[in-house]
Image: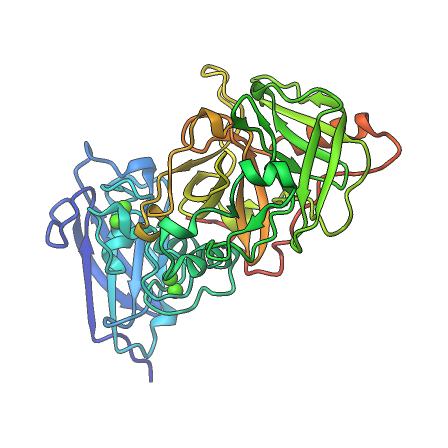
Length: 429
Ligand SMILES: [Ca+2]
Ligand SMILES: [Ca+2]
Ligand SMILES: [Ca+2]
Ligand SMILES: [Ca+2]
């Protein structure tokens, strides 16, 4: 004997965000028959859904559980008759439906309807980066994955692991003592080749041997980031040092290795990328780990990356936290901007305590994601709020420059493997 939910109701919104403001929709002829849910929706024709999308959410446990999208209309024009497969609702004691557009009143990239259906605040952008159930997935990323923001069901995703790799380390640390990655940086260390790690640094266990922090020319410390045993990335606008200039690298055990620049090539692209590849005089040992980069399919795991924590080094040897806006923006010819790995001041309050605006003197320092204890190079700081050209976007040009500088060595940028994690749904929302 078939049993259908004994309680069915529709809460409808177009652009209003109050659960009671359903007057924009009129729902008629609501019925379930032969496993199919039928109803007709109408709304004022001068207030069409943004982008034409109407999502029908369903929730079968009113006290917990994610509200999932049961059906999406992509070119919704009123009046609209819905006939939706509801066979999964057989034997469900109660169901809650919500019909919503993709309007986003607080601009946190989670539609009002999903926020309402999942108990978030459609007027508060900060809830998008909160992790209410502690599974590592921020609420925005629960939305992308279609997981439950109130149940720990997202821990096997790359988004969750990348967030926890920073957030778990920040917990209980005080920014006043935990920001410097090195002690005595860099004046005394520069003279003695002895640069000590700060045991109180929040990221002291992360291997950042790829970064050469000792380049005290004209006051600003010009960082270089190793991307193969013998190639380094530098910022062009920071007047990359001439051949013959020394760079120092520190292994995790404190051993220091000195190399000098043998040749360099600028990455030429329009708009400018500000990137330079330098060839060192001999390879570094395996105790110095070149930085890896994101794989070409990173969006299958990370989407835009919006809301992920990123870490930036600065000219004082601190390791700062920002939040990703987009791991790889479009190039903007009008603004003369290349594709950027762009960050913002964190909305998440613990991360925000470890944030500082980067300044001109911080240029050439690297920005990473942390995957467990492994840094993933995103950009070399160029300007304005932790922005720099996306290394992923220009990987082919960087590979070509590395080959050009050392044709017989065969080095290329190395990528991290994200495919051991659960991917985003094939049609991310
Ligand atoms: Ca929102
Ligand atoms: Ca919100
Ligand atoms: Ca979560
Ligand atoms: Ca969850």
